[in-house]
Length: 537
Image 1 (tube, rainbow, N blue to C red):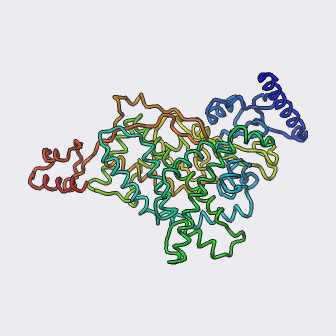
Image 2 (tube, rainbow, N blue to C red):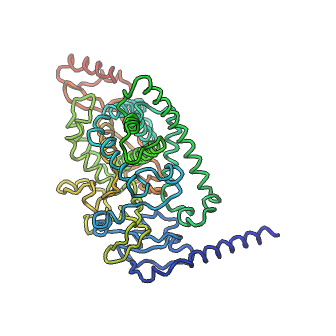
Image 3 (cartoon, one colour):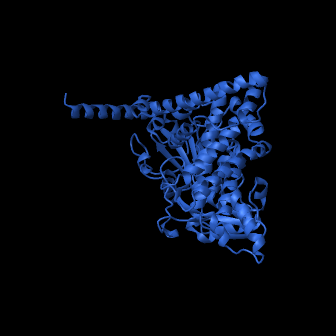
C-alpha cells in the first residue's frame, strides 16, 4: 500500500477514535452551570488557542474577552482558568480543601516515584504527612538558617569566579545555576554531588517537561501517545539517571551512618533519622525520600537562578533601579570585605527589587494545576469533581485594578505597601497559596537576596558589545517556568573597597595599578592598606 495512503488511514483512524471516546462522555456536564469560555473545536477543544504562544499570555488575552473565570477544553481535560485576584481567593481560601488535589501527570508518575512527592502528589493522608514533615523538619525558618554557612560559602565561590572574570562577558545563568545547585546539594547531602553537571542537566530537562501541556497529558486515555511522542522514554531516561545518582549518595551515607551514627545535619540525615525512628502513619521508603529531593532540586534550583537572572536583567534595563540598589548595598556595608546573611536585613530596597522581579516574572506564571476533589462553586459557577483548575499568577500580578502602571518594573511601588508573596495577598502569589503553597519560600528567597547583594556590592555591571539598556531582551521561553529566552550576558567590573576610608573606586584588573590611586590625604597609610587588601582578593 502507498505510504501516503497508509498515513491518511492512520490519521483517519485516530480522528475517529478520538471522536467516539470524546462523545461517549456522560451528559451530566449539561446540567452543570459551567463558566463561559471560547468556542471549542472537536477533539482538540481549545488547544489551538494556546498552541505556539506563551500559555500565561494566551490565557490572559482570552480572559479579557471571556472573563476572569473561563471553562476550556484542553484535549480531554476539562479545565477552569482563573485570571483575577478576587477569584484566586476563592480557589486558595474559600475552596482550598475542595481543590487541594493535583491532576495525574505522566511526569509525576514516572519521575516522582508514583506521584509520591509533595509538589505534584494527590491530596490525602500520605500527602498531609509528607507536607508536615517537610515544613516542620526540613524547611522551617530555623532549619533554613542552619544552612547559612553553605549558602555563604557558595556565594563566596561565585564572587571569586566573577573576580577572575572581570572585564569579560559572562552568561549569568550558567554560573548562577551552578551556585544555586551547589547550595541545594550541600543543604541536602552535606557536600557537592559527584555528578553535579549531570544533575543540573537533568533538573533543567525536567523544568522543560513539567508544563502539563504535552499531548500524553492532554489525552490520557490514549496511552500510546506517550510512546509515539517520545515523552515516556524521555521521562524514563531522566528517572533512571536521577535514581542512579540518588542510589549512590544514599548507599554512601548509609555506610557512614553505620560506622559513625547520625552525625550530619543535612536534609538526608534528617530524613533517614525520621525513616528509621518509625512512628509515622505511613512509613517512608528510600523512593519517597528521593521524590522529596527531586522536588528540592527542581523547585529550588531553577526558580532561584531564574529570579536572579531576571532581577539583573530588569536592573540593566532600568539603570536608575540599579544605581539605587547599589547605593543602598554599598552604603549599608561600606568597608566590609565580606557580607553575611545577617547583614541582609538592612537592605530594604533590594528586597523591593526581588519582590518586583517575582511580580513581573513569577517562576511559574501558571501555578501548578489543582484538581477538584469535592464539587464546589467559584463565582457562582459549578466546579465538578476531577475538574482541573489553573490560576494564572502572572495575570493576577499585572491586574490594573490592583497595580498602578502594572507592566512596568517599579520596585518603589512596595515602599508604602504591605503586599507580599506569602500567600495572603492574592494579587501576588508567585509561590501559590493555601495548602498547596510552596514550602521552600524562605530557602529560595534567602539565596536570591544573598547572591544579588554580593553581586551589587563587589561589582559594577555593563552590557557587552556596546548594547544599551533599550537593547536588553526580556522575551520569555516556552515552558512551565518563565525562563528568559536569550540568556543574559554581562561584563563585571571589580570594585575595591578601602576598609580604612570607606572609599569605593573602579580599578583595572591589574592590581599593581592600585598604587597609582590616591585615596586619602595620608598616602603613607592608604597605599599599604590597599596593597594588603588587594592581596586578599
